Image (cartoon, rainbow, N blue to C red):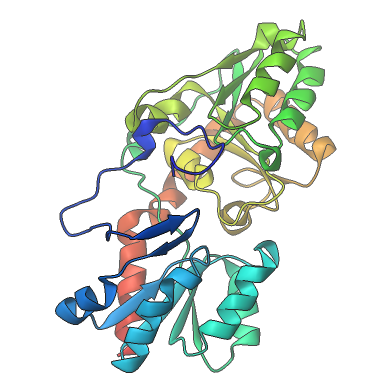
Length: 325
């Protein structure tokens, strides 16, 4: 993750691997394309029963593993896959051309499940969204409504996540609401532009602050500093901050283009789904004007979130593998 151009992700994103995982050595690597000359030899030695081709980023780089699995009559799973209309069309075309014999498509959400069920009827499709490590967040106490409400954007600072739009909406609300705050946490190419916008605004400079973190545990504990998460990207294939904030016991405002929000949030029941700046503003006003909603939604979200954890997702994957025989 730290090698992606313009990500500006700090070193703690380089997560240590457990002993049973390894990154294979590559002779060639350019962006998302790589070649491992010893892959076939390693597969012959390990002789796995299942090959999982994850995502669509490395279409060409999987080819040797796919061919090995076909030759040795192994089961091949692909995914979790996001809705293909939001992926690069070249990658989707390559997938269709190169990987015709897939035993199971793992779909990150219901939209991708519908797509692969329709276009690949002869193959089995399963719902398996991304797992979230929620153990630390689940120890957090649900938020209680106080005199000040703090909204949080945590994640990438780039155009797709519309952080500048969040700042504009918040700026209008903060002009008439003295007891609201906005907390920003994350990195990305638009971070400097966000900082400039805050510094140039008399309202934002008094009510917006940055939360700098230096370790993964601090990333997870960032949720403790706020009451309501705002997840407002133009598109997100899943959106892990949603289940993380739910596990932490927060209120949620999320764009309806975030797959996790579409799966986990019932509008008005445990958060709010929004389509544009006006609806984002109205959702924020609802939390501001209705005391107790944050605690109510936070308690509900903490009950739902464990189903999105690593162990529940592992059980689901295990059931899928068993069903394939």
